[in-house]
Amino acid sequence: MRWQDGFRLTSSALTCRPLRSLLTLLGIAIGIAAVALLTAIGEGVRGYVLENFSQFGTRIITVRPGKTQTSGLGGLLGSVRPLTISDTDALRRLPHVEAAVPIIPGSGDIQFGQLSRRSDILGGGHQLAQAWRMQLSLGEFLPVARDGRSPPYVVLGHQLRVELFGARNPLGELVRVGGVRFRVIGVMAQKGQLLGFNLDDIAYIPVDWAESLFNRTGVVKVHVVFGAGTTSRVLSQQIRQVLGERHGEEDFSLSTQDDMLRSFNRVLGTLSLAIGALGGISLLVGAVGILTIMTTTVGERTAEIGLLRAIGASPRQVLGLFLAEATLLSLAGGLLGLLLMGLLLGLLHLAMPSLPLALQPLFLLLALLLAAVLGILAGLAPALRAARLHPVAALRSE
Image (cartoon, rainbow, N blue to C red):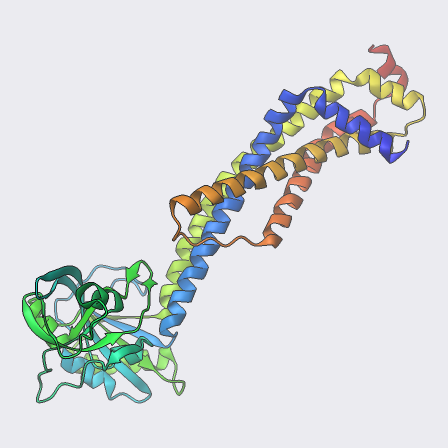
């Protein structure tokens, strides 16, 4: 039997009952589309988070007040002793520490003349721009505190400057931040979004002014940036020793960039398992559909199988015909699934343009390969049954 004849027989068998074939391949299509779509979203989010983390560098340890019950990002705070600005100064003196930045976030009205805008307000130290690898487009960043008190200066984000001043130079102008007057000494270069936060719509003020503005007795967290001469584990031990001596106990928690990435990977891993389970169920339904339709087809085409055997077709050729039919049906489902995924990706991009997506061509090929393997496995038992039919017994069933 020539391969052209085999292909013609296989394709005609699928098209003679189009509705049954369509319903069967839909199960494969939905499974492939679900796995491919959610994997594209997952990989896009992973790449987005890693890219944003890389903007700050990987040599950062975050210190927060309160002892957590776990070593990760979560946990129940069990201590009320605050981290102070003097704690930050002590950490800054540790070997290999390049910057120690106290941080107090908040929000409030930023006013200039008759213009007002509700924006984020970030109280930070003079090393914040250095630690976060941020550049200025005008002026300078917050200076070092003098005589224990910082001057009332503010640095505006790019968007905040545009909204309040337009093209006008804001340096030296007085603005009200949360009702308190500050003098503008700098404007940050355009930075964009970071993990959902608009870094261009922030007013940066000294951390001691943020304490009084937000009525706090300590900082929310401290970012400690270290150089290549040490490791996060060694420096974490030094931080615990210094703060433990100052506080009398370990009433604070530490987390590194690696800790955050591990936590993120755990969440993404759990999501991937859920995605795999949903896609697997759909693919299993498709496989059962292929098994059912092929078993039914063998029963309906018993006489045809007997005729093929009678005119010289070998059991191996009959086996190949039915395996090819199952594989072709599964591949058609895989292609339909990829088309469905492309349509859904387009709709997602229109609805949520900022949603990160990462579509890898290799994964598309693997999806088609998975569909083909699934078709072969689901069609193997019916194909073996067809190949083992005796031609005389098969012809008698006519």
